[in-house]
Length: 389
Image 1: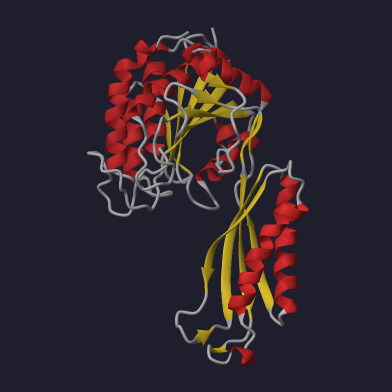
Image 2: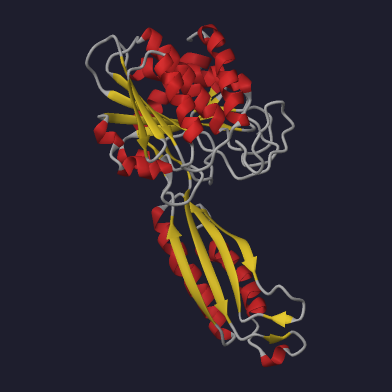
């Protein structure tokens, strides 16, 4: 096993970096201070090849190993925060009202910076490492991962394999989780406008009440999964928004419904788009109303490739021991735009234990600083495993 002692000093530095980033969160592509901070740190480590302004505020930096020519692998960290009011009560809580690092991207960035500093000083590998600092993971299309791929980073930096890491609350500190194949779900979003005929709430018989119809549609959508999908398949349809009239005595002309679809199978995305419309339309027309429908394909399934999954398992095992690596971790139906990079190149996403903490996207969440040395160590172990001398 690789000793974690080598990363003790880096953990202290990475903790300072993370706290600074946590106090100064930025959203989507508007990561100007964050990108400046990351770029300055990379330059201070003696890394000469740093390209900025990719996907607006993204960064790719290259470190050449001392072993000479070889392939280039990509290591990716996301940098953006979320529009959430923080309630963690930490001394390093967000200084910017309405913004916080509620998904641990501050930790992801700090860990990759820590690995960058170590790798730039040792260079005990052949080939090159491309450090990918990505903006806008938390937004809908076009997300930062998609935009960086579209701007050609894989070809531009000759990246042959790409790897990602995400913290996971509920997993013990010092443990890792990964699986071959799908590890996170796809994400699609839909909007349904139920068009009826409004009127006075005291005379519902003179209306075509879209509120009642919307309620029937919401209930009807739940049966699509329970009665039309093989129970061994994974599909989640969740209605998350409902907007009707704003007065007690008004039946509106229309009601707006919105929600999200998550699955592990591309064919089920087609099923969901087709069947949500058919169900909503059938129910609405049965009441004498109609619907408008929009369905947006967002993030694809995060799919780990076999060879890269095995390399990740080996690298994590070399760091913490095989017993602390779950190579058949439970699949998450959350979406991750690292999926676009995995469509462009073979690679793998791994989960890093964040200990007992509130869930991701919770106002009380905070990345666990004790996990930093394990994340840094994993990146270094992975590089030295994949690009071994």
